[in-house]
Amino acid sequence: MIGRVEIATAQARIAPHIRRTPVLRLETGALGVDGGLTLKLEHLQVTGSFKVRGAFTSLTGVTLPAAGVVAISGGNHGAAVAYAATQLGAKATVFVPGQIADKVKIARMEGFGATVIIAPGTVDDAVRAYAAFAEETGALAVHPYDAPGTITGQGTAAMEFEEDAPDLDTVLVAVGGGGLIGGVAAWYGGRTKVVAVETEGTACLDLTLKGTLPANFRATGLSASGLGASSIGVLPMEIIRAHVAENVVVSDADVIEAQRRLWAAARVVAEPGGVTALAALTSGAYTPAPDEKVGVVVCGGNAAPDWFLA
Image 1 (cartoon, rainbow, N blue to C red):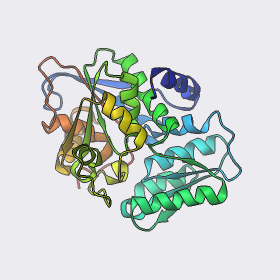
Image 2 (tube, one colour):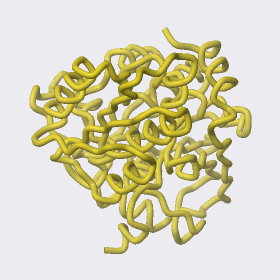
Image 3 (cartoon, rainbow, N blue to C red):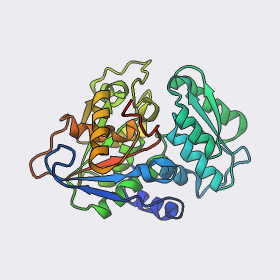
């Protein structure tokens, strides 16, 4: 299982390519939540999300084929892979599921050099098209969450978070396919409580843990383009079962309210998936103990800046 040694090794390799994102300590009551709160601002990362960590971990240290690289993504992973590939002199192709295609994120991917292909149908349909492209062309396939390089790279965010905020008792993390929470939980390894957060429309982890995930699960709602996996990856699930203490689910209305409070308190704008973890606190879905020190990963910022005001 992926652990601290692998994550520290990845951090040393990708450090020249990424930003060390800051943490923001909010005073007690700043978001209408009792107790202080520390945010890891990954929406300030290169390409606007944590995903670039896994992209560079996957693409460095290997020989990139002439056909370049290919990704399947709702946006943030595709933008990260496109950026990393461009920086390393390779071509990037990204397949986007038609059901969750977002024009803001498509523009971001194209802006970082990707050839974007909208795959009609579901996420699973797009995954099949992406896999077929890799097989036919020889392009290096970079999975958004169920691959060692991706998970290990995402874990570097937790490594930095602990170095900058070593006193945290609990870290809240949004979940899509499990790459980020897999990396975060692998780094903390049970030494700090890790809580998974999903929206009602993207709750494939919650449904998986309950044994009720339908075979045709389709993500819906505000966070679908960022957290819209159809299942949790095999590798992340192993780590989640070993090291994630709790999971909670919030509504789209909770996500909007979390962003409104974050804007009012700190003038920070993230995307819906980026504030999903924060919504667990502001909605009361997760209630810390009186002296519990809580951290939240604000994982992405690729959305229209006024999305929460509409």
